[in-house]
Length: 558
Image (cartoon, rainbow, N blue to C red):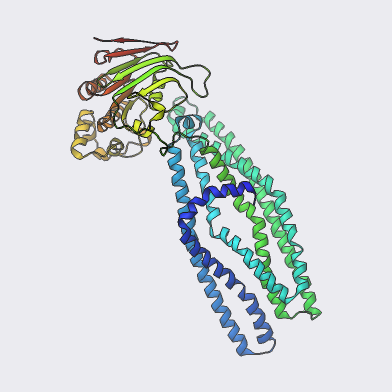
């Protein structure tokens, strides 16, 4: 095993370590299984030499009964080992996926901006390949070394010459296996990558199905998907051919060696240098001697996808990081003041500054209106305030403390957002509202009424248990925005409320609902409102204009 593969194994060892008792118990059963597996060939030899050849029915019966008991015990141990290793492998894989899920959801926004959701999901599913590292077969492979040694010792005791001739062929298996290793690793990684690209494109098309139909682009989109799929299939065929060729080469070698044993063993029996019982024992131990050789040679095709997947997971998901909550980050339980001083910012993949020398100050009770054309940086201001990006110049202060010194989790827990791009889960209306905070029934009813959802919910056959569909596909735009307002109302203990183009494309009644919510419910909160129109001018005491050249000027209502 290469140093790189040992390093990758070290990454997953921490997931096996807490289950060490289960591992030891499973391994103990396997050791017992390996030792018992050495008995049948020798018992067969005794049955032939002492029972059949001597015409001793009593001895034959005795050995047959012992052999039957050995096979029953072997089967029982094999079953118990399978159950224990299934528990070990599936629980280990669960822990890996749990940690991976937690890490993915805590990755910075930059990661999700640079990768399609379908591509990320496909890369995540590659973790399934890791199950082979913790399977029963993988540990049987390790224990087969002991079977190999045991079989070799017994075979040497039976006939040195015949055993030596069989052992001399073993290095050929290693050479054949090594010949295909590099090419197989390359095509495995290539197939995984093309599969991830295909699934990413396919999911993107499914998500945009309505837009594709609206623009009559079904045929063009299908053609694009099929072209990507064609490349994926080509790579999969190459993978299958290489896998089959390498596996068959190993199996052919194994078959040829068994033919060699037939010839050499038969020759020895004819020359009476060994007995028929010894030959029968040799054929039994031949499997114990060569099964590990064949399995180790084939292990590349079993474990290489797992190592490739592990390396891809490490390189893809571990190259990004947002923050380590275990570090000395300051946690806040209140936000009383926000200040941005001469902030300059350029997106990681951008060439121009989106903000230049931007200034903003908001205290409790302030209602700040950010105005400006598309592309002037309004949404960027919000992303910076939420700590999505840290590569800004200037100062962003929360309660007088630099934002980068704060725990992002505690910061975001104090902020509520009503956005035109609200995301809804394919769940009930109730669960989509309560997703942020658990609220009692009384407060929930108040939220439904104040958000304007009450009448709509009452008109539905299943009331608030109605499923909204993926990302709210079963709701109208106005209903989705009312649900967004309800979410914000549920999180009423927040200190900062942000309205990101929240009234875009809304009817007058829904706009009035949002304005009323700001005036009546958020008197002692910090409110930041982004809007193109003058609709919120009368409820805001501060207005910040972001112009096309990315500078700002501020004015204050008296």
